Image 1 (cartoon, rainbow, N blue to C red):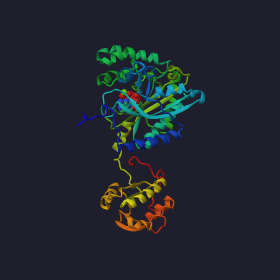
Image 2 (tube, rainbow, N blue to C red; image 1 turned 30 degrees about the horizontal axis):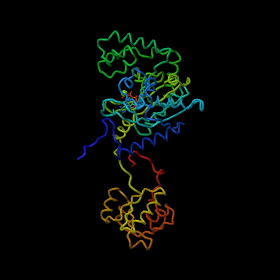
Image 3 (spheres, rainbow, N blue to C red; image 1 turned 135 degrees about the horizontal axis):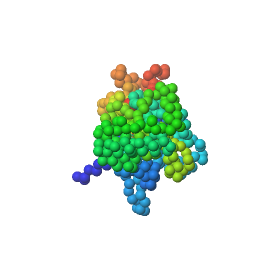
Amino acid sequence: MPELIQSVRGMNDLLPPDSAKWGYVERRCRELFERHGYEEIRTPVLEHTPLFARGIGETTDIVEKEMYTFTDRDESSLTLRPEGTASVIRAYIEHSLAHREPVSKLFYIGPMFRRERPQKGRYRQFHQIGAEILGRDDPLIDAELLLMLHDFFTALRLEVTIDVNSLGDAVCRPAYRESLRVFGESRLAQLCENCHARLHRNPLRLLDCKEPGCRQVTADAPVFADFLCAPCRDHFARVQDYLRRENVPFALNPRLVRGLDYYCRTSFEVIAQGLGSQNAVCGGGRYDGLVEQLGGPAVPGIGFAIGVERLVMLLQAQAPPRSSPPDLFIAPLGEAAEGRAFSVAHRLRLGGYRIELESGSRGLKAQMRRADKLGARYVLILGENELAAGKGTVRDMQAKSDRPAAIDLALPARAMIEAIYNPSSQPSALSPQPEGAEQDSPGKV
Ligand code: ATP
Ligand code: MG
């Protein structure tokens, strides 16, 4: 026996029926984001390593210990993208999007890679739905982005809380950082090893530590709200006013500093119940200055990234997956009937109907069992002797009745299905709408 090759640890296959939930989430995202004027961007999964070192920050967990970095055959250092923002901005600069439009609203959906310890809700390949707005720095745009995020979760019938904080700007952050450093120094003995290092490199991240001991110590650390300069305070107040205006529930969280170095002003995280300790389903914030830092023009930006695995876990708790049945199951009996069934199936599928087609070499009984398992209401049985007459037999699986139906390939698909569903040939209430006209649901496969 050859040795079994398995998937890489922390990197998962996505199989049906779960893949249907992903499709549903992605459709909802496209619908809503496009309604807000976002356009899709796709960037490569591999980038030159310095992009992330510069774009995410040398002192972040991601850059310090989570990146998949390797040397290519030409000795250049490449990294599998650990997040999307740096790549989007690289592309934004490289293709001079700023010259084309004063404001770019972009979204992406795709895999990200981080070498973390795999556990529930934490993987080494995971997926993000992200959005970025480049070119606006007014509070209205921050509020609009948060409102869309809120609407996205609401559309998925998920209850979440949005934590928000302001991380100030280059004017007010130094004083706050210094006050945190002084605070940390005074309690050094009670802080973990990691926090000792953070204290010197990036004191804001003291607030980010997940050690219960550290969290207790920093519970009464200074808060940024007391240090914000007047423009930052005003900006934050106006974002909150807009959110209240549309009844977006949010909570002020002075501990929220986010892992990435480039955030300023409005920062946020979406928290969900039922995910255990990996309860952040989305993170984001404003990053004015990042485009410049990556060699581009002085364009402000704000964005978020949603963890799709965690989002789908939340949907899992909500409704069990249910596959929707075919509009028609076609059961041909024998080779000649199979040929006709092949054409009927093609015609109906082109017309938007969902058709299951069996092999003509299987017995009727086996085919019926399969139709039953798939939940088909109607089965079109095509027997050899009915072929010449251009007929078939329709079995109504619910009523458990058979009746003859005319099969005319010259008719449009809609008329063909009418004739199958309702041999008396009046359009019936039972006829399904073609794909797309139906109400979408997470269970729909
Ligand atoms: P965490 O604190 O959970 O490590 P993070 O701050 O590193 O999250 P971000 O970089 O803000 O996460 O990424 C945005 C979202 O992507 C997170 O809220 C989460 O839903 C998801 N995410 C991040 N890392 C992983 C991972 N390793 N596996 C699955 N999802 C992840
Ligand atoms: Mg992380």
